[in-house]
Image 1 (cartoon, rainbow, N blue to C red):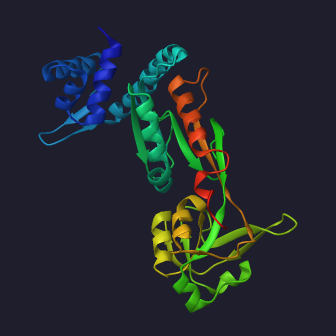
Image 2 (image 1 turned 90 degrees about the vertical axis):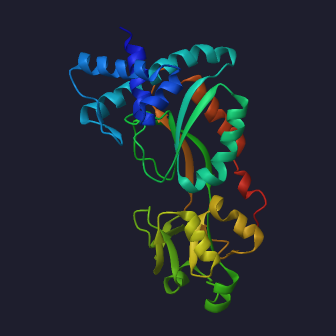
Image 3 (image 1 turned 45 degrees about the horizontal axis):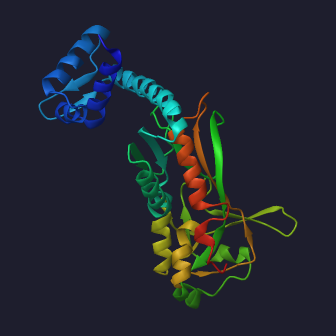
Length: 305
């Protein structure tokens, strides 16, 4: 009885939602995979997978066992990676979570270079704005922007990011250009609903004290790219991280305003669960990202803001 192989087999079936595809991934016959699952359920005395003619899904017991198996298999990979990484050889699977807008624009190019440098490494990337449970869902690390709330995670700072207030030339021609932050209280604005108060925009005065203005929300959305495009279309003012609006500013489809205002910015971190030995694959990815982005983000290099 090989419990490690049983776990690998079960996790593959659960992730791929197919005995046939799991068998292909494991280089086994489908009958062998089915037999392992049947024997595993018999040994545990619980049904792990609910099967119908059209689909399969995890039972409650299956979800609990799946999360445990992911952690155990991840620990095994971490142990092997720590040893093999000593010689510069990195393999196994790296599971990464990142926000959608940043991931599409800036993480993807960096990730492609990292995978090319480590051809034996498999990467599982989750791009969404939800706050994933790194431990419960088996992620190696996540990229997070803003305030960190989970103190149980280890955080490595990538860089600070400026917030830039901007609008389209046609919007400013029609509505006028604000001369002070409080002028925004009379202009239609496009706000990020992921923040605690989407309609409150904050800045620091000349003494470093934090000030704020409540803006009229014309559109509220969870995605920064959508709000940038709405601003380009002339629908309102936006206050967005430089990594979202930098290209539009360079092309002139958005124009920066209130350039001397010190808007409260955000910080980008890579976070990972606390562990005694950081896996070589995770350490290598962190080093790669820090080198790719740099302490002053490359997307701000040519911005006249």
